[in-house]
Length: 217
Length: 233
Image (tube, rainbow over all chains, first blue to last red; front, side, top):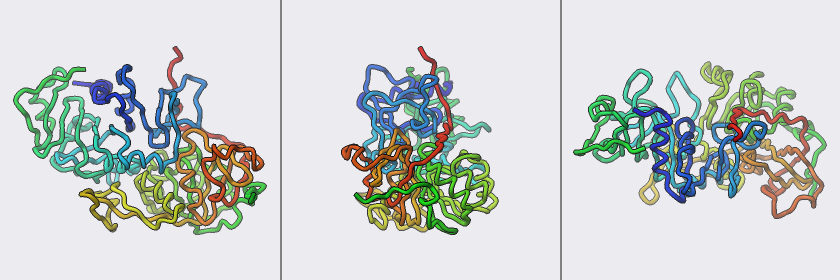
C-alpha cells in the first residue's frame, strides 16, 4: 500500500517531457518533488504563474508570489506571470497538457465530486470545475477509501458533481485505474496489494484483465 | 494626458453608497486593494454585493467587511479560509453565489470587453448549470454565463502613473486586470504612483483608459496566508 508520497511518485511517471502541468492542492502538489530531472516540465498555478519553482528559502518569502494554495513559492528561469482570465484561457483552451487533482468521489463513468458536502463543507469549487471540464488528460490522486473505510470509487457519485465524464485515470494508495466504458479498468496494483483487496475497496464496477502487474516506482 | 490621479482613498471612493455592487481584485490576500477595503469599513456602507475570488480571512481582507456585516451577497469561487464567512452563510445572514474560478474571471473580462455573455464548459452537468442555457458546439456541451455588472471595481497594482496605466508584480496580478474597466468606475490603488512618462509604455499591463481614479496607497501590510519555506542547502 502506498502513502501520499508514494501516490505522488507513481503519478510523476505520467509527466512527460515538454508538458505544461497544473497541480491541485494536497497530494498533487507533492508530484513536483518526484518528476525526473532529465525532462523539461513547467508547472502552472491557476492564480497566474507558469514556471513555478519550489518554496523559497527562509527570509526570501514574497507576499506577491504565491501558488493557488496561497503558499509562498518561487519562479524558475523562463517563468511568466499573467492575469486570471489568461490563466483560464490556458486551461479552457487546452494548452495545459496534464491536470492532476484530488477528489472525494469518482464514478465509473468518469464523474468527479470534490467541492462540496451539503450541510457540512462549502468551500467552493475554486478552479476545479474549469479544470475538469476542459482538460483532456486528467489524473485523480486520492486515497482509495475515505476515513470511514468507504470506497471513493463508486457506481455513481453521491456528492454534488464537479464535472461529468471527465476523469481518465486514477492513482490511489492501492491501484492505478483507467476509466473505460466498461467501468474502472485495473491497470496496476500497489506493492503488496492483491487484486482481491482492490476489489473489496471498490464499489464501482472493476474490470480486471488477466494479469495485473505491480506498480514500478 | 488625461490625469486620473486623486490625492487619497477618501476622494477615490467618492460616490460609494449602500446596496452597491463592487468588484475587488486579489487571490487570497495576494494583490487585494487593502486601502479601499479599509475605507469601505470606515464608511460603513451596508447591503453591498462583493465580487471577489475569495472572502479574505477572519481579520483581514474582505473578512473586515464581514465582521461589520456590511456584505449582503458574496460572489466568489473559494471561501474556505474564513470561519465568520461560513457562519454567516450557513445562518442565511449572507447570500453566497459560488462561481467556477475561470468563469468568475471571464465574467469580469466580458464586462470589460463589452460581451454580454459567453459559453464555457465549466460547470456543465453540475448544480452551477441549473437554470442556465446549455448548448453543444462540436459535440461538447457548454453553458451560457453572463457578464457581471458592477458600480465600482477596486484593484491594486504595484506601480501606476497619473494617466492610470498599471503594472503588477508577481502573482499579485490575478483578477485585478480583469476587473479594470469592468464596472462603472474603476479605482486603482498602487504602491508607487509616478508622473506620466516615467513608465515604459511597452511594459504597461493595463492601459489607463480602463481606470477612472488612481491613488498611491499607504501602509500596505501584504499579509502572507501560508508561509512555506524550504531548507537552505
